[in-house]
Image 1 (spheres, rainbow, N blue to C red):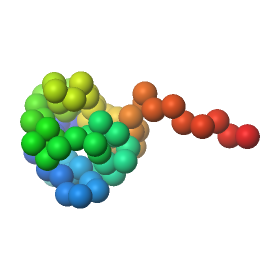
Image 2: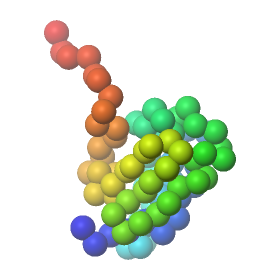
Image 3: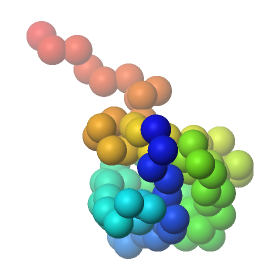
Length: 82
């Protein structure tokens, strides 16, 4: 994928990711528990690369492709449907 993030910022419940194609994605922090429980300083320590977003201290990596397709944290165990 050739779309990259240009900036990332947060409000109380949302991560906002500006893309180089002009779109801005608003993603619920609830999708990413590590970010949800992080401090503002930890969230601000994001590294933006052509492949996605990385927080070294939080051990969190998020691909831009995943954000565009609506995928949250894939390591969360979700209850199975009964």
